Length: 447
Image (tube, rainbow, N blue to C red; front, side):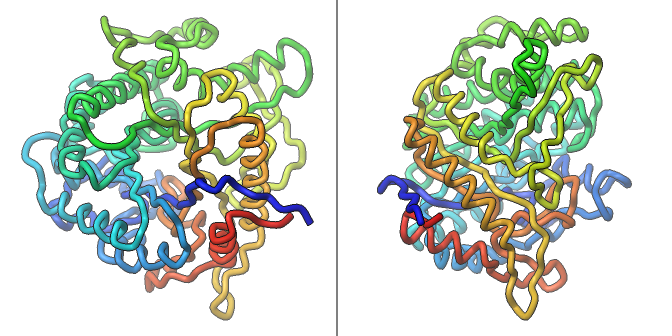
């Protein structure tokens, strides 16, 4: 048996998002978000599910913190619901919403856990969407004002901040593919949204510095790894485009101050371009303190003319798949981390999401989710390899603490290390919970 030993200062944690767990959609002064609207639009969500109740963590946060205390984590990543703070996106602050997050953060701190706060995990106030949403540059101003309120309120309590979660999903998945709220299918719109998210990120980082807010700030893009099927240049280029959609498009502006030429040129062939205003790129490339990485899957791909946006098709290699149908591809985790490290430098990295969907429920009071344990082992080995190769990993936060509202999949897909019975809201710790607890306690595991 080999021992996989992690650095002594490694932070361990878990993560959630406001709309996925909180519920209480019309309580405490909260306004509607785009996900309230989208989830109640017929045909958008599996089984017609919505987040009205979700895991009811708004009322059960103390129970959830107690579960995390038993898990033994150092850090909990959560997101703030913008419409809880500004029900209309702008205007008067809703103090009830602010107070809820103070109670949550105080409970975490009292139990020895460090809060990591995501400012935007997709729940845009519907009132702002009605005015054009992220296609409207006025939303950038509204986001900066919202962030400033949160920075001032929680300065000294929260010391790790994330501006945006998965900007690819906010832009392309939601406004080109149309699978997530607000459900548009317009490539130019998606490119506009991605750019405005970049500008909002940069302005928020700049404001964080100007206010003298204590702590560190970064963002959390989602990445995949696309391995070329062969050494042919066409296959290599197709995979570079497919990967660049996630990586270079959302990394180059922040770290280099420009969009990647190979992607810009390709998108211009499709008739779309980035609408850059004076000063945008300088604003976007504000230095950040750390990078969050969300990784779940990857694939082998090759060139195929007119296949998708990038003349790229995936070729099934017979990898194991999770219950949501995603490849179990830990080699891609190692490769994407070392690629980012080589291309952008040894910036501190937190793995802000990594996890798997397995839908086992309780049998005789126990959830035997061996698939999730295997997934965690394989990906933590890949993470350890990246550390050995010099990637500056500061922490690992698995997705997710709880089974929850899984966006377009509703309640049909389960990513939690804690099972939630959606009828009773009873929490049951899965076998993966206990495996992860042991790994955290030891700071190592055997393979």
